[in-house]
Length: 337
Image (cartoon, rainbow, N blue to C red; front, side, top):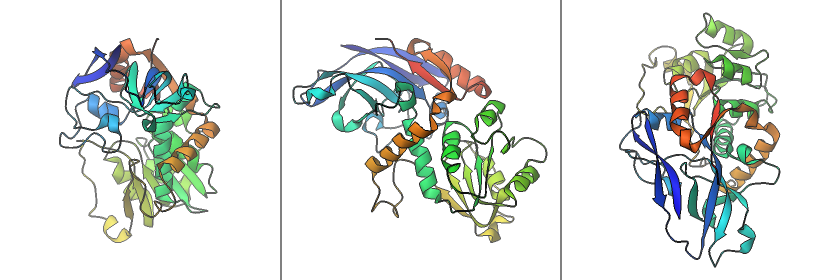
């Protein structure tokens, strides 16, 4: 059987290739993809060639193990339907909608332990948000917000929007968000009054006014390392800055020689592949996925899908995200049977 799979072949170049799938083993299933989500952060670093060549793509996700080098099949938000089952697989999996951390491809063969059944209450498009929602859950867990805190979220891409949505459920004193793109600011769960443009004159003072002082807790989710300077300037004494962005090879001058030296601010690296050691005695990936599915039901993030492209037009999708990011929030690739 043939499949179509997307490869990043060079900087700003993608190519749809046809490959032959291996034979189905006894404990395998064949999944036909319905839709997959493009990551505006990690995938754009791959598309732009701004990734570190000596880093493993993902040590946890089996479909993504290996190094960052072209040609590279990448992506990790694939939703489809089980079309064939191996002879040792329970037949109840037949035609079941599933999620997988797979590159963008029309079909794939998988073991059952790499698949997540999609709850009946969620659509395939909503399920595409699972990786980003798991990331948002992880960010909030790593931050451990406290009742009555002042919280700032820098960056309102998909991860930022999901994180702000989760934080809006907490009894905080105030929650402020910021993004340089108007469309994303308008999409923020608190857009009506507390979403700011970080490039606007007086941004720092406006943020301090809305926060009623410095932030106790700041999330840096913009993907821009220079935004760390805003986080440092707006976070108060002994505050926490949770860094969820992956910068790849991006570089920026960070001002650590001023107030930061005496601030006792904690910089927290947060990445979803692992669970914080202080939680790992009670939490595992299964429990965190369960929390993420329930959060998707509450937040309904499909409202942030701005574009849908057939997989055959993937190059146009990446070009749009690269050249006109202000027009996009979430882009999906769609697949015909």
